[in-house]
Image (cartoon, rainbow, N blue to C red; front, side):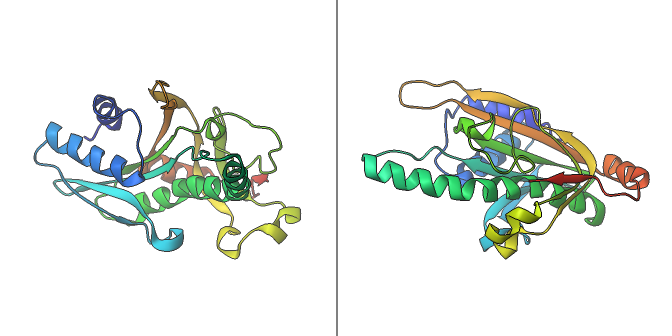
Length: 226
């Protein structure tokens, strides 16, 4: 059985930070092969991802498939003061969309465990060196679609009607989760010199828990508004 926590612990030995998400995918694959040479893997885009981004790696152990969705956010405010201001404006504009996609990965992983043969469980991995992803910052307008420490997800999550006018049509669909999840961020590497602290949150999604959630889902919606 693939142990993602052990893979991440092993990955810490070679990396303190990452420039691209693909580096994380590649690192996880190399560590998995080192621990178990019989493991096979492939990377590729999630069919539901905006702009068809490469966000997943799928490990194969015999007839068992173990998908891992990876999201990574880097702190990119640097350079001249004017450039920092431009990046900060763009960052705030994109923040809620990014986090919406991160949470939607939980929904996609639930669906994969239900419909893909040989997929009994999978992982959603979030990683960032931007503390705004794991702790509350001022002026937040999207409390439902946040990724902060301790946040709980479950049921049907929707944008508030007052928010819909500014949401791109590809981001407006509700997120439906049958099981329940809670975010727990852990340190991947400490701050050192110019390198910022990196943290990760790992959530395991199993077919058994998703099926249990479907069976116990009440007829009334569980409302979460942003």
